[in-house]
Image 1 (cartoon, each protein chain N blue to C red):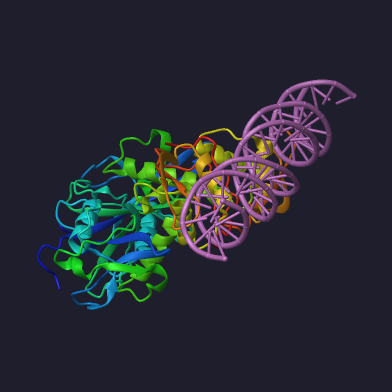
Image 2 (spheres, rainbow over the protein chains, first blue to last red):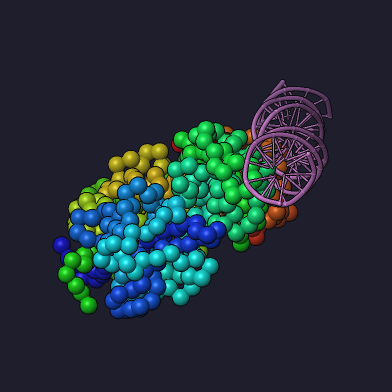
Length: 230
Length: 230
DNA sequence: CATAATTATTGTCAGTCTGACGGTAATGCG
DNA sequence: CGCATTACCGTCAGACTGACAATAATTATG
């Protein structure tokens, strides 16, 4: 029953897919093929369709625009953005989702997928729409997630070393951590990681023990950043 | 430029206004005057209008439906809810906002405001739409906010005692806290509260010193609940 | 007016967690 | 075999927390 003074609008879902590549936090971006902002970098995303759930739309758009299968990803809602002027195409409210994934090569096949690529977060200024703002919020959320959950393992492959995991924290937080204290904390937290028994040989030096993600999802007590933001 | 296969929908903003009354956490509800769910309790809220911001819509709806002036409130977005079947009137995505306020009498004057009232959260099952779900998420968010921010003071009036503040924590968290440890923690946290110099006489017993909210917003270190949820 | 009852506030003490940092272990290379 | 390199273990002091004892300031009561 449409009524007067009820605003009808479109709802978009935008995705912030983060990974750690080359010791740098990177975000999945696409190059826009259509106007507005044609040719400019943007977060992958698109419009909600009939009968579709918000996460459903997120998974579909992720697949359409990057070829990735988001069904295994931990998609987490960040926030809804509803500024009236945020999109020149008209009134569009966007819901942002965040996911963290290991450093995998992007599928090159597929239609629109060819325009998808990784961009270092530090150099990702100038995205289309209000995507700079969305990205900043999502990265802050990711940093907080590392404090209170075991999601850092989502940045790693199936098997990883404690050093790999520490590197994730250092890259995402942008600060060095003491390896000895970090080891103590991770190994002392029940269910954070469990040893696989395997080892990995570095180019030079002592081999490192391999671990996989444990069953725990929450860190209690958390790993708090010393330098708290404003 | 409307296109095929772009879904047009309405966007609602729903409000979870919490307070502590009679040592119980209560939520502001209205009785629905229109179908669907006519006569049933629901969270205050309504549709986004043209040119309106999300928080703008939240403040306006709060005023229209309860007579409260939300401009002084700390309105915080909880989440967007987009299940296709969540509203029988059609496709409506809702963005929920959370606020905490002191125990003030509701304005009785005003048009729709007469139907607004406080409901204990523990007895708030059976709300219209998916508002039970929204309420549960918002309450959990409020509990977390008490751990990491100074927002508990938002539940108190301008002047309050440490006991008042502790009562807020106990009611919102649903667990008893040691008064001595709580005092130490609050007074030891820079900028949480500052003394007014005044005192309040209880019916019987030693008078309590009065405080007002300090300048800090974040608690570092936080006041973690011992019993962490799943 | 003394004493009890009640509420507020300060203090103590052991256990835990963290940050800082020294030392040891296991590999490859010359 | 010694050396560089990376991984890992141990120690210690300070901070914070949870549990509990003791004191302070008021009203009620005999």
